[in-house]
Amino acid sequence: MSSDASEFDPNRIESYKFPETTYTYSERDVALYALGIGACARDAVDVDQLKFVYHDKGQKFIQVLPTFAALFSLGSLPGGLGLPGLKYDPRLLLHGQQYIELYKPLPSNACLKNTVSLAGLHDKGKAAILEIETKSYDKDSGALLCMNRTTAFLRGAGGFSKSSHPYSYSNYPKDKVPSVKIPKGQPFVVFEDCTQPSQALLYRLSGDYNPLHSDPTFAKVAGFTRPILHGLCTLGFSVRAIVKCICRGDPNLVKCISGRFLLHVYPGETLLTEMWLEGLRVIYQTKVKERSRTVLSGYVDLHGLSSSL
Ligand SMILES: CCCCCCC/C=C/C(=O)SCCNC(=O)CCNC(=O)[C@H](O)C(C)(C)COP(=O)(O)OP(=O)(O)OC[C@H]1O[C@@H](n2cnc3c(N)ncnc32)[C@H](O)[C@@H]1OP(=O)(O)O
Image: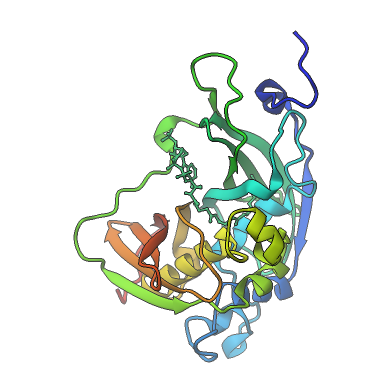
């Protein structure tokens, strides 16, 4: 049976072969990203942060924060989500989740080859959930550096299932689904950080130019009183807090990162990142202080613990 080209067609989406893409970045991009997620904003000589924006203490290369890897996922989709069979309103797209596995320390400049595939597609009735997997290889050495699984929550695009059973496709086992239970006890540490009113305007220069984060009229159509912060910016603030407080500034202790965006953040709001340590897993949740609302939760797995902890 042929389907109408303007219809949401899960089979066409599933069979789409994404083109391979390249993504090149320099130390300038690394430093700009770090500033975009608030590094050194409160203290320009912070010993745990300066190395992410400057050749501190004569270091040869600027160090790379682990969440920088998330940029490769959006960078691997230069045409955005214009997939055949995917019918949705781009104004209603929200970032739902981000999952990152890091296999090697990220170089401070590189040319990457990205392979992209569909990781999941789910009909939630009021929304469609689309998951995209990106594997990033160093083009010169061929080494696999990291994998991203990016989840888009497409409001209003659900209801496309053809049977009574809601459509659900995943290319990874269900027990690998990032889920997190926040412990009942007091957090091991809480880190407070202020986002700036201009935070999203700075962060967008790292490559996500969606007007949801900069254009007041667009933001209103999307259902917000003003432009909201990029989810990946909030994730960057939270993981930077974990690198500072638990990894004692060492970005290479981070093995894997998982986060679910629970509520939007307005630029200028204060973020409180609460962290619990369970073995080599840091469970975290981030709250907006002014509204007492949790906006992000997830976990970060570490290779080991800093000896000074
Ligand atoms: C793929 C590449 C393109 C990515 C482009 C990224 C562009 C960047 C955009 C942004 O940065 S937007 C800003 C960051 N994101 C946000 O601010 C979103 C914050 N979250 C919310 O507002 C809400 O959580 C929500 C996403 C609107 C969902 O809330 P809602 O109340 O509508 O959902 P529920 O009724 O609780 O759940 C329905 C169903 O969906 C599942 N689900 C809920 N939240 C998420 C989520 N964040 N990610 C993935 N899935 C989610 C939930 O489990 C339910 O499923 P079932 O349990 O019923 O099976």
